[in-house]
Image 1 (cartoon, rainbow over the protein chains, first blue to last red):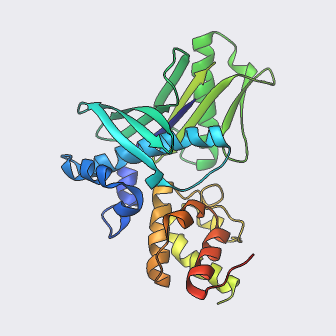
Image 2: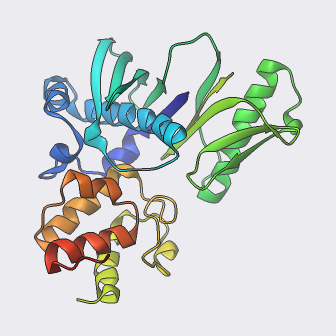
Length: 198
Length: 87
């Protein structure tokens, strides 16, 4: 399965003061806090780790059909990284999820995978043209379906997306469930989709 | 403090993190922070810290896990501050 998360760094800076007293302790393990304080831009590391946790959590919800707020239980380890790309792993109880993240000056984007496979993967980050939140869900679905239809050469009009009560998106083709795992994320100006077709 | 009063106290705490203030008008115990109020998960931690300092309590990790609805927050505050357990 696949999970993703995108962070608009400008929006994150405005919305959330991670430096407030007690904040980091509620979210990050001591290993993660060391990653943050040792990184040249601690703020970017905060959101990189956050997006790793969130991406892994998106898989957790698809696997377990329940939600929870447990950032400390999704524990990150960073693997190799450059200034632009980080690979890592998130551990949750007995499970682990591989992650890959991209960092730019404006955004951080992560995908998590429950297993490494050669399944067909499709993912993209984009800037919303819609400003209204209500229309953004539609823009997200449309961007994804359009991309998918071109990649697998099937008409876009035959696809649709429905979300369940846990907000998990499901792909339908001609009214039938299309065997896949999909994850959508939006924050600030940016949207991101990731899908794995079985 | 009755639950209605508690919910209005919570409303004050939640307000800065809600994008569309209209969403706050009809909050009840079943209101979901993420699904109904569109609060992002990073700000859920802020809400927990605000609840901790407002009511002078410590929210343990187990309670944090369930803090997805207004009702869960009300239940938590009742339990920690007023020792009221609702079965």
